[in-house]
Image (tube, rainbow, N blue to C red; front, top):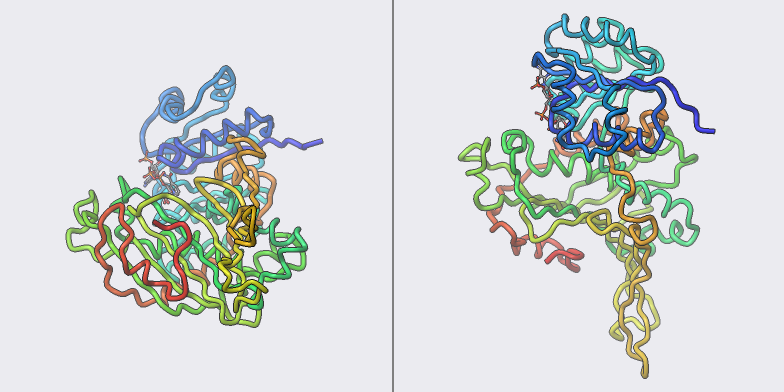
Length: 448
Ligand SMILES: NC(=O)c1ccc[n+]([C@@H]2O[C@H](COP(=O)([O-])OP(=O)(O)OC[C@H]3O[C@@H](n4cnc5c(N)ncnc54)[C@H](OP(=O)(O)O)[C@@H]3O)[C@@H](O)[C@H]2O)c1
């Protein structure tokens, strides 16, 4: 039987966008599924809100049903300025009346992480069973990430620390390890002998919206490539871990990241970006980046990894495309056949498909066909969101889809070492020709 414990969720930054749109709705879903025991949620903010005002504020984005009234009884509020010790004393008093299994979620901007960490430690709020969750971005370069890791690791053991990259909790990203390590026909061909090239694409069809001020400091490489895309690269590139536990998986991912070499980069900026709110009028921040990388070691020797992320492109999709048929060795090579490929489609369509050559009726002509696992057809449209998954995993103490200190440092080391060229200006909704020309031996899969 599933064990339930007395959990207290402390949302540091409890009035923010993330707390309202993702965290409270995810906690409510977990509650409705019976996955929370006796629990409390304590939201914090600098504002002097009553409990009722706070509940109203965070309730706006909730898809309410009859259980909301029960759920909201467990929501509390603590006024807390991250820089003022008095607020932590208020929080400490509130915690006394709550369950002992504490989950502190730093749902705020990264510049506050150091001071929050220090204050949580100063009042001994983090106990042996506590989990401390750090939102992304974790630092803004190798130096700041190392400094933050040092602060954290001096105060809390790594077992209590959960660095978030919510991409890892998307259903199809979670499926990647299962696909590779539980299917004996897949893993033997995941190497340079069979794979021709790999593409990792995260294309968005919208601009920076209200995040201009934040985005302009980071750009596509630090915001998306550094985190989500290097994580996907490490999951695709890793060797079979000794065990599918957090330590072994993260050891293998670090090994991949240590062996990444950047071979080529191009960047772009969409027309009108400099007029967005919060963006510098002379900004040279890239809103698009295409990267060609290689991995050290015999498994992927000579296999290019093409990685693309961009805002305001023609469509929104994320996928991993693995192209086989290295050297066109099939008996019908050159006879109109196409290279086989395996595609993990992360969003918006979720699924995995293998593209094979098939016979057209009435002759020996070939045409490509998909052998497909459609996630929504199989599991329905309403599988848990990434945030619901990550909260459930943190609750269970499962660190597999959270990032260890050395992974994040390797990610920043790669990014710090990149020399970004001047961005090419491109029209919103259009993929610039430089992106199409970036791949010499093929084209980006699905990019129009
Ligand atoms: N929004 C999303 O969907 C999303 C998705 C992925 C990752 N993230 C990441 O999540 C983090 C939070 O994003 P967000 O969009 O929720 O930001 P936000 O809307 O700006 O919220 C920031 C929160 O931090 C609090 N805060 C700021 N300064 C404070 C201080 N000195 N003392 C106490 N509280 C303070 C704010 O509370 P008061 O102003 O009420 O005091 C607010 O609750 C960021 O690192 C972001 O990159 C967000």
